[in-house]
Image 1 (cartoon, each protein chain N blue to C red):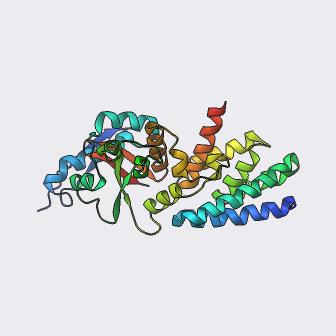
Image 2 (image 1 turned 180 degrees about the vertical axis):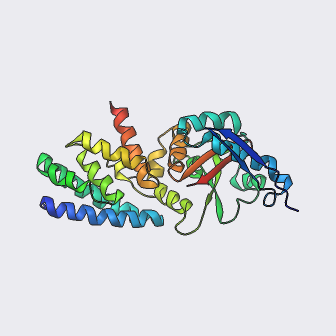
Image 3 (image 1 turned 30 degrees about the horizontal axis):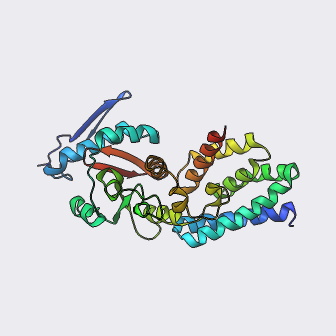
Length: 111
Length: 181
């Protein structure tokens, strides 16, 4: 298992790649990134509140793919902060805005 | 002599807006152009549900058995553009949603999008072909396969919501019009 700092570094790096391949419409690479990021996020979630502070700090990184993945990870730890970020991203444009909107929609449907 | 008679005049929100396009828009196309511009003003910023509801009243519904037949009726999609099905053609297959071809290859399910490498059409098509574990809750299936379990209306709304992240989706009496941001 990786430590929190390492996992956040990985999350940032893979999110930036995710942005590049998504904008190019490269579906196989998009799938690969989704799987990589899902595993990183699962590891981070396993740390629970121990990862909370560093995740919240990472919400300020000026890249919407990074912010989306950090907020998505944070949903199970600090839902309020995660929601605010996802709502901001959902109001933007492109695939990442759509993904944020879908996550929020699914959360509302679960209520 | 320049003909500066406005093709479209719009008033509202404390301002009057007129478009003098007589030089650019051939007379034959002016009624349609006028409708598109008016509807851009009318429907910009509306929710997917509102757009879909308006579309049901405005966009003609005419189904075709195949995409080539629909394309023949539609004509060319425009410069550097491609036809895009809002509910994908792949959902006709029995292995997916099994929708009727006449529902999918229908005037009310088609829109032109900017195409080519790095275009909106390429990003959207790529996403449908990809696995998005955030959307599917960790299930390793493509967005397209995940959608196959949804109704036509749910897939249509998904398609409109996605398009709205790239531009305004405008209903007109000739079909859907996409106005990129």
